[in-house]
Length: 50
Image (cartoon, rainbow, N blue to C red; front, side, top):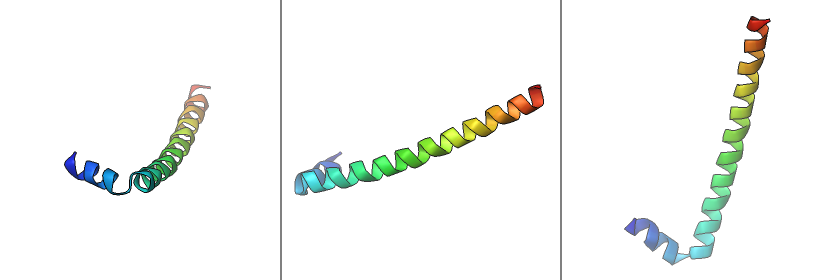
């Protein structure tokens, strides 16, 4: 907690901007990966079910 608070107070806007940008990239990659996985799973279920 203390280290992150010090880092935030050092350059608040720059630091938060970088963190947000990194998180958005990670979230978008993760979401696309999850969507692809769910599509594969549902297709496989339908193929085996019918």
